[in-house]
Image 1 (cartoon, rainbow, N blue to C red):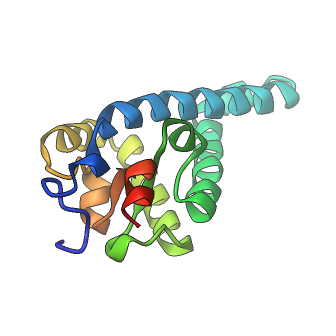
Image 2 (image 1 turned 180 degrees about the horizontal axis):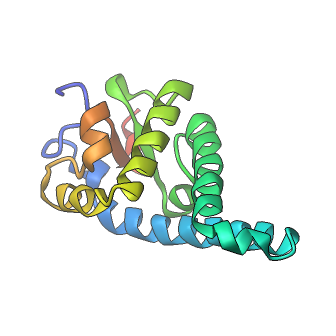
Image 3 (image 1 turned 90 degrees about the vertical axis):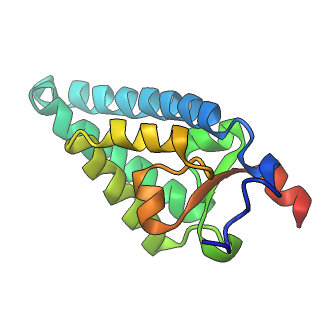
Length: 147
């Protein structure tokens, strides 16, 4: 994984990334929940009986386009962080799909706490899906200033 930013030599890439990820997660969760509630209301309340499924579907279609186009979700853009794959490249459609699917599986199987623990103990602040795909979340400003 030497082609990812070095956490010692390029520490600015990872400065406060975990806090920013948490804030971004809350922003995204609120947006997803709002959309899921809106869909449930528009279906005359029937959607509330399938709310968890609607939340997952909305979450997938909220995350996937953002990661494909911007390499970040709306919450991540608001907090100034973005995903990078090897060779400092932004996510493409395949990485966006794999990361979104992996994240949804982590939520569905209760592996998300494992991911959070990994973010706290790994040098590059990588969660479970990040480690599997060899991706990182970095500060956008630090990455741009180094180019």
